[in-house]
Image 1 (cartoon, rainbow, N blue to C red):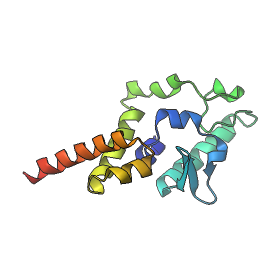
Image 2 (image 1 turned 90 degrees about the vertical axis):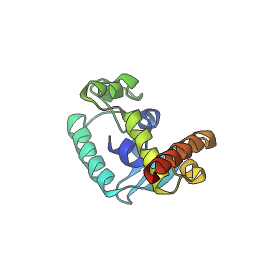
Image 3 (image 1 turned 90 degrees about the horizontal axis):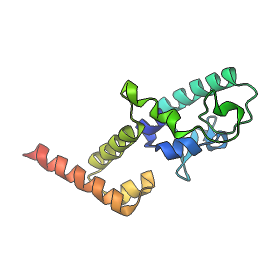
Image 4 (image 1 turned 135 degrees about the vertical axis):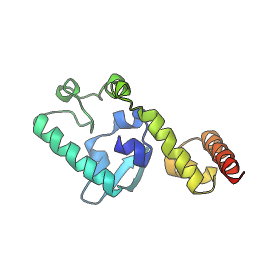
Length: 142
């Protein structure tokens, strides 16, 4: 959840993350093909998860960061259903990701280029987020 909330990682990105994408010692993570600093909250969550992963599946051959009881003994990513199981508990990672991008759009003055670069999203998608941010800002001004 932290990667979606802080770094706006999509479910597709989360499924593909490998242990090689995370460099805790240097506080770096590679998301969407871009290496970026790990936020403190993310670093803490990743450390906790990696400890749990190591304790639960010490001999797992799976190099993916996020694994489940089933995927721990294979080499492929966890199934998408692994992430959708959170929805009944009220957690929708894609919604959290969208909220994070929109928050960034509002914070930086609805700059679509910034959004496209930071979140590795298409310029058309970045433009839509910028438009939503402008609308929200206009509504607040009234």
